[in-house]
Length: 416
Ligand code: EPZ
Image 1 (cartoon, rainbow, N blue to C red):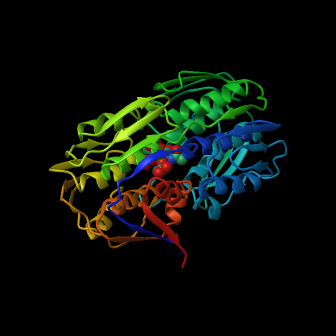
Image 2: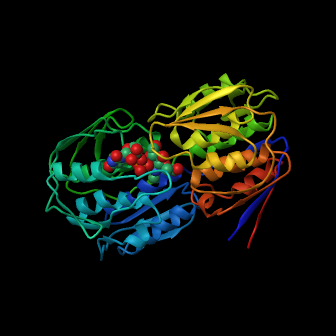
Image 3: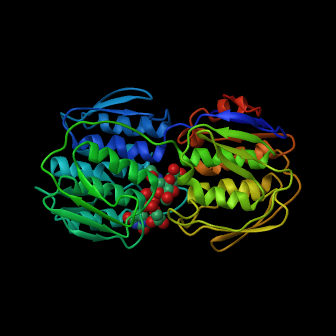
């Protein structure tokens, strides 16, 4: 299994191109199930999770070709079952459920099971489909859903759920009548998906707010569209600048989508400003400690919690980091302590006491964003850090070690 080896202490400077957003590309690729014909999607990132959803779609008979630009056609769906061995690899596979029921009237999708960061139930997806008239049974670890034609309904999400909102928004596009999603998630990836669906002929209003209205239509048509840049990857590189007293120009990112992060990082003393179409992030020798509380968008993103914690381990004081979205998203803490960090977990908060320097050591990735935070810590640490189980990072970051070494980091991937 590959490892990533980092010799820390280098200042990062230069510019970096951000890939397409994994969490936008996944629902956009799933939306191809709604349409008979060739869609073309641009700016698809080259990631393990993208390969996973494309093989899942292929198992339904969906054709797709290309890399960063993907042409995809669900004209002939020959199977509506998403098997456990594929779904357990990636929970976002549940995104095929809504489109399959809407397009084919049936779906058999394995329950995703939990993952390192939490139980990750999909009860709200199931509840909403039932409210739209689908017959849904949970049997032998599978969700079995049937509906001759979904009916519009008013759905209230008890919890703001990103893929729940995406699944039901997609299902509603072909339902009979109007569906109103209340307490909908507001993430930019949902707005991107809504734009793609509208391009297919769907009638959607309110994406990006907590009330989304969808007027069902009889059928949709193929579209050519683009996936937005990955705001979590962009945020990860901005934090890399903050941890190495660096100066990095982030070429493709929408500053509006990461305001919660940039506002927080300015509190630490960083200089971050929009500069001719890019975002310029400059770190300081002294990093001020700040408190962070993760919230659904537009609050501070849970997917950047581990990364800002890495920065707080070398800040000047005490930082309280509270995780409100997932119940077990502190797997990176014990690994950071191996690098010398001073962190104590109290319930759903981590108390981080900043120290002058981390020291390199062998560490293990446990989940996607934890692995990114350990790479960040290794960049700032004195000496050598060796990260194992790097398959986690390959799920969500395209060629991260190439992008970092182009910024001056001493980082390389070794196999074995
Ligand atoms: C999406 O996951 C993202 N994944 C996650 O990114 C991200 O961390 C998360 O949203 C929160 O922003 C994709 O978009 C593919 P949720 P999702 O449903 O949709 C509870 C990454 O690193 N919940 O918004 O699965 C749930 O347990 C990944 O790229 C229910 O209880 O997250 C959690 O506590 C990790 N019942 C909360 O809601 C449900 O039916 C928010 O989860 C659904 C969710």
